[in-house]
Each structure stands twice: as structure tokens, then as C-alpha cells.
Length: 382
Image (cartoon, rainbow, N blue to C red; front, side, top):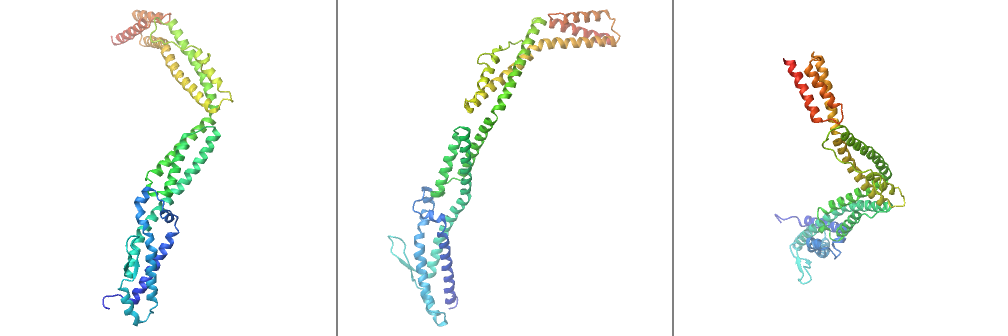
């Protein structure tokens, strides 16, 4: 028996291998993933990936049963050294019957080979079950969280009286993912869970936005009313600046016309449209939409009036700037001892007469102020 394992030791080893295989198979068979994979109704991708592997489970128990029967016979031989030869002979003879398939005749294998064959069949089955177990462990809690979130969002949408399509879209994805997880887990793309998370997040953001719009409606209506008050003042200022420029400045350039007061306070003007929104009988979503439109129009008008006021005030601002320059130059004349200079005094008087007599010709006034500045510089360097 040189080079060979002691038959009694080998029998114990094979018994240990058999018991381990049986324990693994028994435990695996309690797994919901195993039950799903052996249900006979696998989805297309899962069938393609592990269908043939899982079919081998039908061979495992008969194979292990045959090995167990053979080991029972070996155990019955006893443990004496005198039976070692008989055990060795049986271990080297094909004694375990293996059913290869419905259309393939059964064959016999050595006990050790039978157990090796069982291990070779069991490992890929265990790997398939473990893969599904892992997917369920990772995805089922995410699905549960998504469904709870979507249920809450549906309740909130109902409270707000709205139908939000993003919720339905996310729900459809959750239902599809859940169905595939229990029937065709190998057909789930790695990006599918993240896509569901994204759709749920979008639905949650939309509901949060709607809730904010609902809860902030009254506040936004009040701020819009304040904005209309500001528009009235801004429009009046822009119109007054235009009239002042026309009155005080000769041929003022760059003036723009101002929208009529009816844009704000006329029939169907901004104020009239805002008043309609104080009717609580109108659904809040309609009021929200209409308020956003009024606010958008008011904001555009605000920008328009700001530009108009600046443009219409431009000629008066230019006149005032020239007046300020003239005053500064006159002060400088006195400071450098040119207060009695007849030429400079006449220029200053002409400029003052132009700038303080309406309508002011800005081109003439600016030329006179520039001439005064040059005259002061010339006298200072003489």
C-alpha cells in the first residue's frame, strides 16, 4: 500500500466530504434565491446565464444518495485492519450509479470521483445563488426605500391636488425592477438601480418645488403687489425725466417713450391680473401659474423702466455734470489768481448763461466749459 492513503483514513475523509456536500446543499436549498432559480420560470437573461447550471441540481441528490449508500456499505465492513484490503478494493471499483440524463444511460463511478463530480456541479450552482443573494441584499432595501418615498410623494401630490407624471415614471421603473429582480435578476443592467434613484430624486424635487410654490403663494402675491407699487414709482420717474429733458434741454438725444399707465393699472393690466388671483375658489395651481406669469411680466417691465429712466435722465445728468465742472473751474480760477481775468470770466459767464437758461444746448455748453478749462491751463503755464 506504499504511496496509497490508508483505506480507513480515506473512508473517513470521503465521509467528511459527503457530509459537507450534503450540508451545503441543504443550506442552499433554504435560500429564496435558490428556490427562484429552480422554479422553472426564469426570465430570458437568467435562463441564458444559469439555466443549464441550475438544471444540474437534479443530478446532485441522486449522486450524493448513491455515494451515501456506498459509504454505508463501507462502514458496515467495520474498522479492523483486516478489512482495509476489502475497503481498498471497493474504493477502486466503480460502484456509484450516476444518471447522466433522461436520454443517456446511467453509468457507474468510483466513490471518490462521484464526490468530485458532486463538488464540480455544486460550486457553480452555489455561485449563481450567491450572486442572486447579493443582488437581493443590495437592491431590495433600495427598492423598499424607493417605494416608500414614492408613496409619500403620491400622498403629497394628492394633498396639493396635482398629478405629477414623474412619480408615475419612477413607479413604473420600480415595479419593473422589482419584477425582474424576482424573475430575471441576471437581466438587470448595472445602471438600472441608479436610474431608479435618479427618477425618484427628480420626482421628489418636483413635489418639493410644487409644495414650495403652494406654501409660498400668499407671500409671493404680497411681494408682487409691492413690485407693482415700485413699478408705478419707476414709471413716473422715467416719464418725469423724459418731460424734464424735453423742457430743459434743446433737442435732447436718446429719449425713449414710456409705457402707458394702463400697462400696470388698466383693464387686464398687471394689477388687474393680480387681483384675480386673490380668489381662493381658483385652484392654487392655476393661481401659481398665473402669478408666475404676472411676476415675469412685472420683472421685464421693471428692467425696461430702469433703462428708460436712465436714458431719459441722461440729458439732465449731462447738464448737471457740466454745471459741476463749471463750478469747479470757477473755484480754480479764484485759487490761481485768475478771478479777474477778463477772457476767462467772459467764458465762464457764457457757459453759466447757457447751462442755467432753458432750453440748454448741451453741445454749446460743453464747448464753452472745455474752452474755459483750456484757458485756465494756458494761463497757468504762461
